[in-house]
Amino acid sequence: MAETPLAFEIATFVVLALFFIVDLFVIGRRPHVPSTKECVQHIAFFVVMALIFGGCIWYFAGSKPAIEFYSGWLTEYSLSIDNLFVFVIIMSNFAVPKQIQKYVLSVGITIALIFRGVFILIGAALISRFTWVFFIFGAFLIYTAVKLVLGGDDDEEYQENGLIRALRKVIRITDEYDGEKLRTTRNGVRYWTPMLIVFLTIGTTDVMFAFDSIPAIFGLTKDPFLVFTSNVFALLGLQQLYFLLGALLDKLVYLPLGLSVVLGFIGVKLVMEALHGNTLPFINGGEGVHWVPEVPTWLSLAVIVVAIGGAALASVAKMKAMDAGKGSKPAVESGADGE
Image 1 (cartoon, helix red, strand yellow):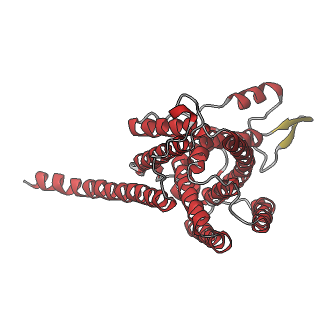
Image 2 (cartoon, helix red, strand yellow):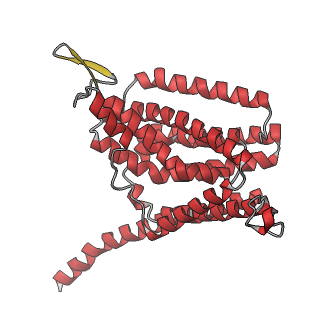
Image 3 (tube, one colour):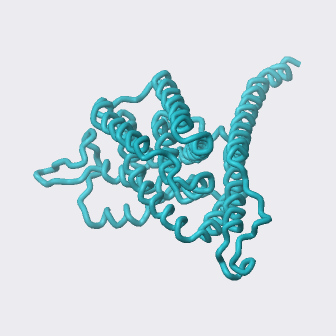
């Protein structure tokens, strides 16, 4: 199922591993609140790196896997933006000091990538053996799309998952932070700091987000390498995006609608692919439904760009219209008083 040369994949993993080591143990040792300029520079850097990486895939493996990577990266990036609000809530609930939030996000995202890597391997193994899994993935994505349209998203009410609740019962955890330390001493007794819970909360919560994002990317490419790197490049700039857009997430009012279009489209695409390669005996006698058309890769990319781009532009337009309305209201009232 791999579409890229093995040597290119190995080189990619080595470079990404070095980047995360530097980010955690060099840059992460300098706790601070990133400025707007720093955030914009980092986001621009990661976006350019993703574009260059896609170009490298195009050079070494051809246009098809490159377009698949770009489609997966844009989809994952969009879903990550929508889920940033939960990270804001987590930081608030655990009262994480602003100076160490960047470091917390770095570690949490690294944990999330490890979990996602396992999830991707399991998904790839299932797909390679059971094509009918596409029916499940597709149905789940369509359900998620409908849920987004109807406003059935529970992200605003974050609750600790079972793993975190169980962990609190078996280990001693303080209520105060001690810088970036995981362990601290109080009255001669060793305790874990809340940092451990925050790391695990962000990592495991992100994996829950992956239950709709990973199937979505598998609907765009079957290559586990492209699925994983799409996730990596989407999550790389997430910590800077957190600081840049944290206060503006509620302004992106049409983003859920754009995401619903993307997820619904990919869900239908997965069902069509499942029908085309069908092996279930109660559908068409176990034979593939060959009259079902195959969706070209370029069309997937076009739908993603138009849906997400259109949602973002519409949100910005509405935000400006609301700001303009608020700005003109005092003038009207002033005129009324003058009369």
